[in-house]
Each structure stands twice: as C-alpha cells, then as structure tokens.
Length: 151
Image (cartoon, rainbow, N blue to C red; front, side, top):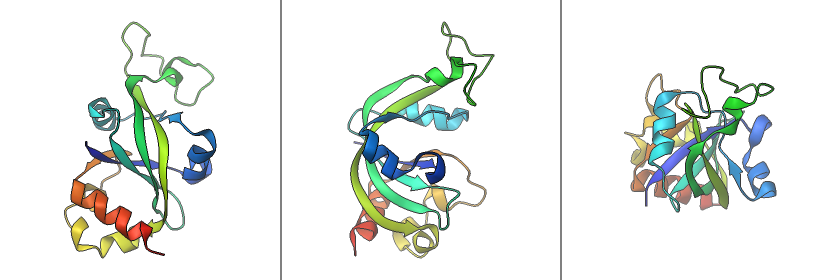
C-alpha cells in the first residue's frame, strides 16, 4: 500500500462533502506531476485529505482509493472550469482517481505539522511546494493520523 496527501479547498469540496457523497472522483488536477502521482495510485492506497486555502489549513481526514486513475471527465465538459480544449477523448490529458472516506481526523494544522519531527522531510513542508497531490512515507502518514486521532 502507498500513502498520499491530497489537497482540496474545503469551501469547494471538503472532507464532510466526501463523507456525505461516500465516494467521489478527484477532479480538476491540472498539474502534470500531480496527475502522474494519481496514475501511480492503486485501489486500497490511503491518503490524507488536506484542507488547503483554509483558516487554518490542515489534515481533516483519511480517504482511500476505490477506483484507479481514469480520464477526468471535466476536461471534456465545456461548462466546467476544468475544461481543457487541447485534450480529447482519444488522447485524454488529465486523470482522476475515485476516493472514499475512511476516518475523520481532528484537524492537524499545517503549523502543528511543522513541529512534528516525523515530517521534517515531508514534501508538504518543502518551500515553494504547491502540488495538490503528493506521496507520503508510511511514517509521515502514520504520524499525521496519530496526531489527528488524539482528542
């Protein structure tokens, strides 16, 4: 099993929305490196659901991959803000994975994560990192889940 961190703005689609919907395609990724990470995801992989552009930003829950990468249909939808005129159904450029909720966490803020020694090398904390999807080590994932499980 691999571990990941997936960012979403909670006012657009937050962890509560995922719980309500039970499963959802992770749409709108328009960065090649983040897309490539999604292409590496396998059914059963787990991810930290991270609320970005929030006050405070942080880890809100755990989700799991329930369907591997496939073309993101929003790239073909002219009414979608994620429409990509240069992508075609014959050669789709963008993918999504389908995720389902696993566990709600006490919000582990970005500031709290910066104090955790287990996350010293975490990509999330690297200067200039803006990726919406990134890998985590098993130790990084476990540390975030442990912190978010404390009440």
